[in-house]
Image (tube, rainbow, N blue to C red; front, side, top):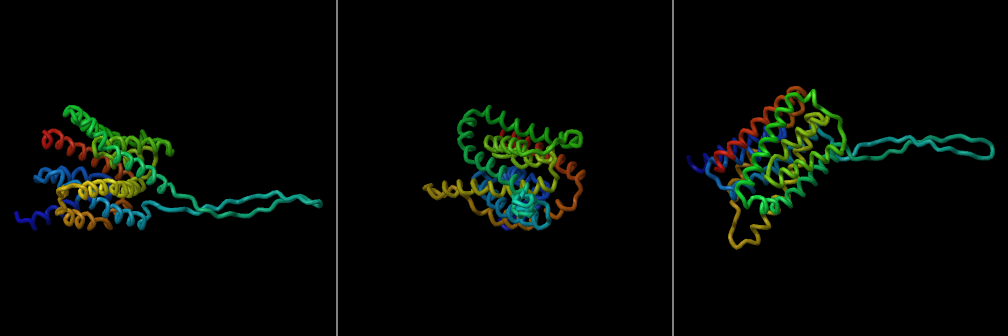
Length: 294
């Protein structure tokens, strides 16, 4: 296979996995990483291209999520009626008038919470990795924990009608903290935990997926900056940029179409698809742990 044919094949894979990620909230980074590793690419060749393509396609996807009304970002107008009691020597009465103000939408607040959790996890991820991954057993246990968690979420989603709870921002912060911890110690499983967690506390599927897409895109900036700074101050070029065009074009091609699927699919199908996606992703992670990393 020639270099051009290989890049076309990678472009197609990027398009497929980004469609899955942008429409269901998971699968691009983890699945594509496993595939590229099986194609004999090294981690130094894979990580930055996936981050760059994930950031740009994620921002583009988020724009279409807003355009298709899968989420609302910014402020929402609220009108408050104020009743003032007025008293003079002759009589007492009241004057009512309305005040218009803009509050942040629920989606905006959730994106901020998840982005902060993700950025903190990215900043501390290297330190955790340095401490925990000195022993191969520790690394193996952590990866198995993440895989079991993702698989468990998939099976929980099957019976989600029976376990769905009520929404609160305390629960959102808890979900962000758990997802951030997973990302800091393993480098992955942020999207699946955040999407499934939101749906389990009463958020609609399309809102959960759209807010996750924007959060992950913003979080990618931290990883990109870290890689570029490392490359700038290194004596040798550590980063391979050759995969970026193929991954970027493939991922961005699907950005307008995936949010449209998110908009039109009903909630029951969402639950089944996300459940299947989580279980499939956990199987891919098992392949990575027991076949690629062994």
